[in-house]
Length: 246
Image (cartoon, rainbow, N blue to C red; front, side, top):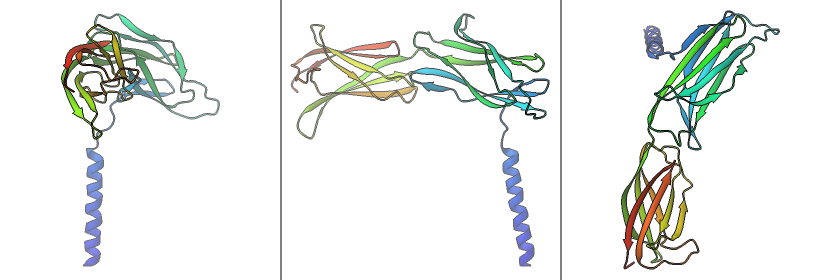
């Protein structure tokens, strides 16, 4: 009886495993015939690096057979990104990859700093050097130029009795970029610059600056109406705040 129970338990476990495997969706790929094999292109999650956007693709060249003398690879060519009007905003030179087959992650970096909001499309062609067959591949991305909005300003008393101004901004569609705060007095003279070391982590985020109410020389500034200018990825926001009785 115990032996039968063990068999049933094993069968149930195998069924569960089979069910899990069956329910897992395979990666979706665009494919082309390369003559001596098959080329598949997978869209990977796009990335941000130093405020720049990266299209990320995985290219898999599956050979029908392997040979030490096989030097045929793939050529990437006609690689460019266009805006919604069809105008090219970025281009790349042709390159040869995957001699003898294999897998490669290919990235296309685009600086959207000066580009307006809209839909942008990546185009690239893969040529199979074995027989000259070609496949054309595309990928779209929606780009928002981003906005910065003033949220609040509040004087905070530190544990040592000194004062700090906490200024909060809402930053939208500026993930991966690093903002900077410049503070001007009522005479238009810049008294302080605060450069952040941390990039914006989400596309709808509250961002905080802390000002010790001192100029760049470390001197406490007097009561005044100050202009707070935040800039990020070519976008800016100005806000006047009057500070007194601190």
